[in-house]
Picture 1 (cartoon, chains in turn brown, cyan):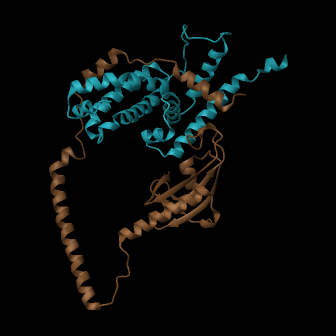
Picture 2 (picture 1 turned 45 degrees about the horizontal axis):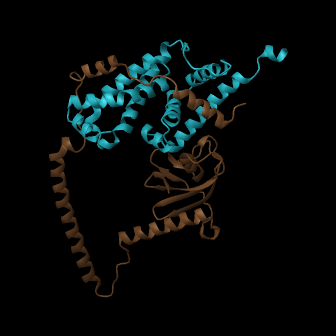
Picture 3 (picture 1 turned 30 degrees about the vertical axis):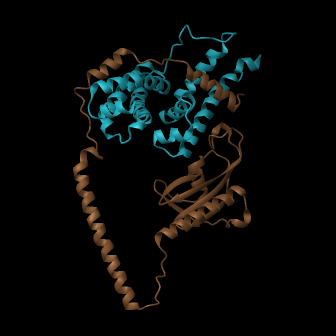
Length: 200
Length: 182
């Protein structure tokens, strides 16, 4: 009975055999058809350059108007409320920075397996852009692969992010990651705005 | 890859594209042949991919990604050719007489034959992952990126494909009924 490594070795050796050169007649046939094969126009920058420039100018003008309006509303609001009325909403920048710091702290705790710093697993589901609503286990399978033997240890919401900490136990056939076969490790997955990504 | 050539070809420079095609043709053909396991289908797929590259080149935003993008178009062309194969191919292959053999002259050929059969049973989706990972030696993240699939899907496909190929090899290792009877 073949082992995984032996199978991989045989398959790699088998794939290394065979043709590597494209016959000239195929290349000639392609080049002969260039004149009659029209290139599709770019749907991004070059073809819409001037239109984009106009859009950019319009967008900048609109942004200036909106900012001016917001400043005006804030000024009027502050005067109506009188002195001593503080804005209870923190600035977006400070919220984002705080979220980022929490995410990083959580990732560090997962990697250290610091149980005190982690929140107990919840039964939340999270919306992804291309797979719909997933459970934490399904999020981990989405990233690690359905064949990967794993345990989802930790799940937490931090700000807008949904974090999943998963531990894979074996990596035979590289079914979990590109790490060496037999590897055990921990990964952290983030779902933000429906996009699933692995946090390094 | 010379990004200047890519940029010039994007603007319709046929000479620049010819240089790109010469440089990319062999590697694309080699991958197509390994996915499709048929020389004529691989030539057709490579030809279609090169024409698609020429046609869609102006839509490539980052010339530095030309190589990865060209492989994506090649795999698409292989899907199209693979569909043709299912409709008529008798799934026969002649072993070249000058293929190297092992000392006993048998096990290598048998392995190849079993692998050939096992590989042909895989879908083009699975074959593409095996070839990009094990022939081009790409990490699975890159394979997933080029094929436009999540990394987990790429791993699942690789695992499934390798399991199938291993089963094909093991099937040959099992004794036949006659051997057991003896």
